[in-house]
Every structure is written in C-alpha cells, then in structure tokens.
Length: 375
View 1 (spheres, rainbow, N blue to C red):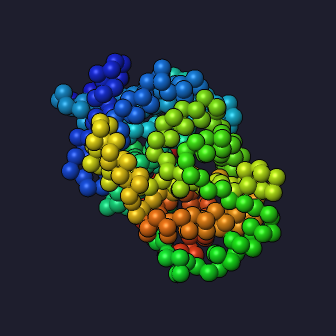
View 2: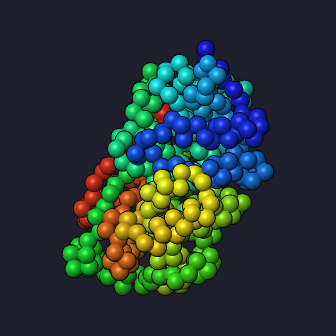
View 3: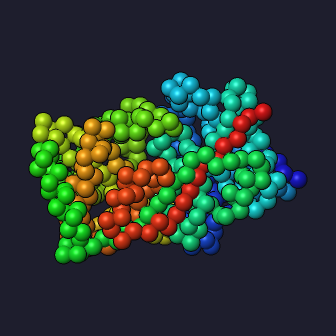
C-alpha cells in the first residue's frame, strides 16, 4: 500500500531531504547536495522566496518505507507577471514504481486545483535561480552543484502519466586549449570588438572587489532574460539570499565583468571550480573536512563549471561573449584549467551554442521539463 505523507515537521523535512541519499546510494554519477542548504530552502523563516510563493512537500511510503518525494509550488510573482496560472513541481525522486510517481503527482495536482491553477510544469524549483529540468540524456555523467540527477525510468513515468515535454536544455563539455592552440579567430575577433565599442574587462583579485558588482549582475540578468516566456524577475530579497548562499563557492579569478566606455556593466560571466567530486566525498555534511575539501576543489582544480552569463540586449549580437570568454581563456591557461562544463542552456539559445563550436565541445547531457493540464 502506498501512502502519501505531507511534510509538517522538522523530522519529516529531514526525511524528505535524505531520501535521495538512499535512492542514489552507490550511483557513481549522483552528486549529493549540502543537507543544511536543502533544509534551509524548505524553511519559510530562512528562504525569502516564501514571501511570494507557497509550497507543500510530500513523501511517499510503501509498507512503511520511504519510496519517493516531491514538492508542489506556486510562485505568485510568476503568475502576476506572466498571467499564467502555473503550478510547479520539483524535488521529484522515486523508486521505479509507476504507482508511486502517480500518487506523488496526484498530490501535486490536488494542491494546484485548490488554488485554481491551470497547468503543471516541472521538475523546477521556486524560481529561475533554482535547479530545473529532468535529466533525459547523460546518465553516465556527474551532475553539477546546480543540477539534479535522475534515473532513466523517471522520464518514462512522466510520459506514461500523460505529461509531455515542454522545455529542453543542453549541456556541453568544452576543452580548453593551451594559449598557443586557442582559436586565433576568437582572439582577433575579441580584440576588434573590444576596440570598436571601447570595452574593458574587469579581473578581480578578491571577493571584496566583486561585491559592488553583484547587484548589478542580477539587474543585468533580469534584463538579459526578460524576453523569455518562462523568466521570473529576481527580487532584491532573493538576490540577498543567493549572494549569501553562493559567495563561499566563488573564486575571484573565474568571474569576469565587461564595462562600456561609461563604466556601465554590459556583460558578465561567472564560472566556478567544479565541486562535483568534492561534494561526493562530503556526502552532504559540512564539517571541517567538508570545508577543507571545498577549499581544495576551489584552489586546486583543472575543471570549472560555467554558471551564469548575462549580456545587455543592446550588445547581444555584437560579439561581447567572445571578449569575456577570451579573457577567461587567459585565466584558465594560467591556472591549468583543461575543461569547462556549461550550465543548462535552452536548446533555442543558438547564439551561445554556435560560439562553443569555436572549441572542441561535446553535448553530453540533456534535460527537460514536462507539463500537463489540470482537469
């Protein structure tokens, strides 16, 4: 017998967060999240997203054993801005039992019907800054700190339950050339663009130097992606939350900003050393050894992950991406970086994917969200 339990206390929250540790135990490709950060994201007192969102979290039990979990969410800012009565679901993990998935999703749908929502979309988080997309290709690749891992049967469950694919993302591995072998056309093009528009690239030596630009980066992020149908404006209180959450992971060498001749921020690119292997060793627990492993990954690493890129719409077709990536190439060469893994990019983002063709790149993962109308 399958029972769906609504999470209502701290013990159940811990059970919800810990379920994937059992589900993916022994999986070489699943990267554990930090347990304390997962609990904080569920805490209405600590996560400011609850100022404009509602959520319920559910656990599935079979014969008394936890066999699945899911979250139902509604972001009221999204509904107000986009005029779409959208229900979100996320944190979707389950054993290979179609009935478990069915019961979990029925709980989500019931949550949406009570709030008169019209369709459901997921797996996603509360906002565009959270993890999104069910893994549909690349099951033998490590996930990154900002993505979920899933087993192949989970997409089959969604299809069998009447869900259809809505959005799709791709992820690439990009080989970093030596300084001598780097594409000459990127170097030359970067120099031409920088001179033509009188641009300058900022290199940072400390986190303190980055702080004055963080809010401007988020402002530019809102401008960059405001034309996407699924983009929800990031509010200041969310910016403050994400700054505090991710500041410990950044390395100043791997963040580049591009300014115009009047010192306005027109583009930025944030990469981070890859924490995937360190997080597997930490296994969710942030004690002294955990901090030491993160420190080692941050300062002694030959792989990085590309997390965020923002370009002012006025410059999006003018080659600015080449300028900041060429500057990163120089940094990568100095630090011995040999590979970059991109964050998920919407398949329709052809401009950035065309840019990767200048390098030895491999499309190694795909992920998607799935949707269904609420009857």
